[in-house]
Length: 259
Image (tube, rainbow, N blue to C red; front, side):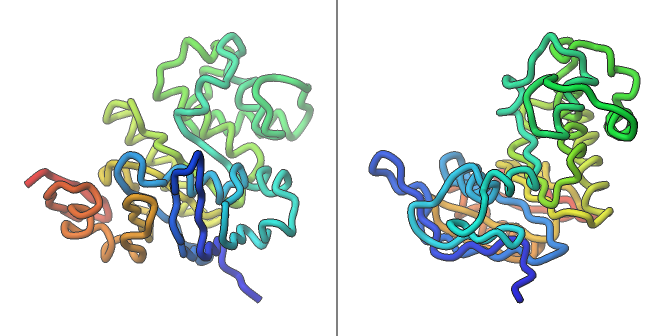
């Protein structure tokens, strides 16, 4: 029996005559946490939208959490996958209090549509506290800073005990302290070992230390794939971005500089 978290074979995606993904092969084993790196337009978010059950490939085979595309209920798969990213911020009702925004994660709705009771209410409080927002539950979502809003989305995603956690450019627009708070939360999830973490980013300094592997895309193809230390190298990233860069690895974190 295949126990891999994700298996992608020969995946292609075409839109309006354009080939966005080209013959992607990718395997994510249990216990692995991946960063997906590449320039704008390389196909990073598109690939993880397929993994999350939000897009169906034009060609190829995809199996996620034991769900083989074409032979399973993708709606059910989506409920097992958490998605955190700046693209979700505009979908949150700004007038609603943060407590209700986080509670909506239990059923993956956008905004308050039902009342919670008992243990579920306690779970909202616990998720808020974990995200460092325990004192902001009554605040309207719109008055929070961008960093607080991203941590709120993180807390919202934890409500449903996801089996796969996808962060899509979640650090975009954040200052350094806000970024590091969010990455600390991601590291906590990885240390717990209850779910795999997939992270899309343009910037290797946004990769938390818990990430074990990296997939580098260029123009919709796999340029490199494997353990992070062997993949996030100066030569590979220079080719991916078309710019000569140097890479430093310090205590499990990666840092890039233009040469």
